[in-house]
Image (cartoon, rainbow, N blue to C red; front, side, top):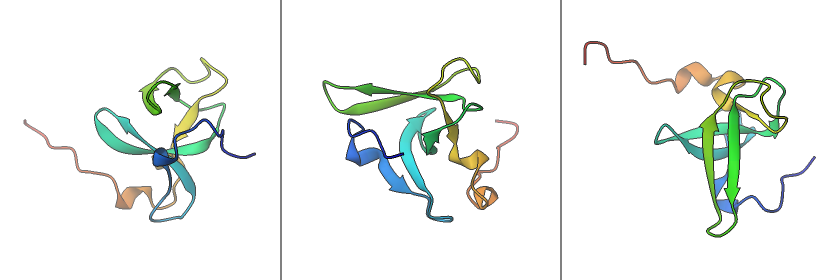
Amino acid sequence: MGVDPRVPKAILGFCRSCKRPVFWVRLNDKPHPVDRLTDPKGTIALTLHKGDDTVTAERVPAGSRPDLHLSHFATCPDANKWRQPVLKGM
């Protein structure tokens, strides 16, 4: 299955660790890798805005839509290398 041709090329990319294809989106105002293929366990909804060729991403309940994606952090074998520490007491 290929990538939908309506998806802006600017969000197409690859994981720097495992080299799998991902979409780069902004989630919680940070760059976030999302697996390109949909998944029944997915929790990330991508919405294409045709007028300005942008994509928004939002977390939704798993299974609430058939077109959801997984965070690449859930599937990347090297995900722990990229996790940011949580700052406590701030």
